[in-house]
Amino acid sequence: MKKRISAILLSILIISGCNLTVDLAGFFYSYSEPDDRFTQRTSLPMHSDPSSLQSIPLTGGKLVYSFAVVSDIHVENSTVPHLQDFIDTMLDPGDRFILDCGDSTQSGTADQFTTYKNIMDSSGIPWFEAIGNHDIYFEGWRNYSSIVGRSIYSFQVGNIGESGSMYVISLDSANSTLGKMQIDWLETTLEEQSGLWDHIVVFFHIQLFSKGLPTIVQFTGTEEIYKLLHLFRINNVDYVFMGHDHIWDYRNFNGVEYITLDPLQKKNSEDSYVRVNVDGEDISFTRVMID
Amino acid sequence: MLGKLLILFLLSSTLLPLSANIEKESSLASSYRYMYHRTLGHKNELFFQGKYSFSNYFLMGTGFSTAFNALPERFYITAEINNLPSLLKYRIRFLSRNFPDYEIRENSIIPTIELSTRFFELELGLSFRFMEALGQNFSYHLQYRLQWNILIFKGYELSFRAGNFDLFRSDNITSLYYTLENRIMIGKKWIITLDIGIHDAGQTTLSSFFTSIYGEIGFKYCL
Image (cartoon, rainbow over all chains, first blue to last red; front, side, top):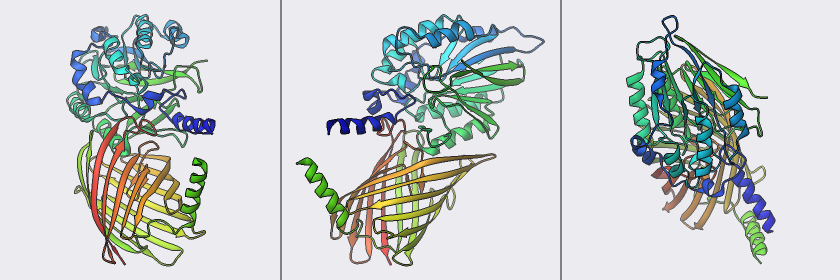
């Protein structure tokens, strides 16, 4: 009887987040709220110094560069071969920075964040992470904020007026809702920045679209999703990168390209990352499969 | 001992008359809902519904709502076949939702099957969702609802419902609404409805963060 009850509970708990591994307490409770994390953001550091991205030299009068996008690394131990392998062998010389769509750690522990940060720092280029639901499990936010930094931010690549300039926004979707403060900030920021930059990229963790019945779309409610789709459309966002689902998905909706990335963790699905190439006003992406 | 009590409970809930006896099959209803969503803010919404039972086996219903941005903003038509056998109901619903602020319209077709006993109702189905703006997006989702009829007295019913959809809503798989429903009979024809509920963030099945709270008051007239 006890085994049956345990099996039933385990089955229910497996319908969780983006990974089949269950973190019991994090499944039931997250003490950290998006409005609190928004309030704290200005007192927390950026994950990397983005200032070097404003001085990329022009090539033929335009900015030509690339950057890599990964997601769902789920660091568990002190050695992370898949992430180290990515840093050591898969970055191009032209990659100026790395975006990570979240769930960098499995359980939000200090050791996991420290390991993650050390490996990402070893890349030698700026990197930026969008906080995921696993990152706020247990004491996750306290560790994240002290080791990684703020969870809501933006930065620029190039300068206004330069061909190929880009504005990048990272959103905190770890609770599957943005919170009033963050969505108001997003609305204002997009309104201010739209039209100033050649490209706008937004990245966050929880994906907006469902690919089918096995897909667990966990952004809270359809209405918040529709509000975001509307904001991205009217402000001419180029790309929206997301993770969480561990299933690749691409769709172009209302002129905005939405990409849900594979994980970078070599477990139950195909693994890949994305490389975005910017050549002045032209922008494109490539999905790079990992053997 | 616990096992025997559970079996007795299940048998009694199966053999006793069906739940929701306070509500007749044909009715007209209207209600007002206030919702506070931590991201989207306040929302006031009016609902109008009607359903008519053509026979013991066939029922149709329709309804619409407005949140004072457009009329209607949500609209549904539903058809139901029941008593084949008595515990089962088969429904198909067309639901249209208009989001004028976001210039998005969503149309869904939702077939479901409901197992209905005196104390429990379980409804399972799929929604085929077409989202339209300047472009289109199609997706399909698992929809489910579990209802526990906690108290059933003459003239009063209290139930608890957890699900990711209802007549006016079709949400994502783990975006659950938990509602406590009161039905109070006034005379022979009128029912006062009082509901309160919370909505989770959709991160997990059982939620780790509640995003909205709502209350709804209304009336129903039994035809």
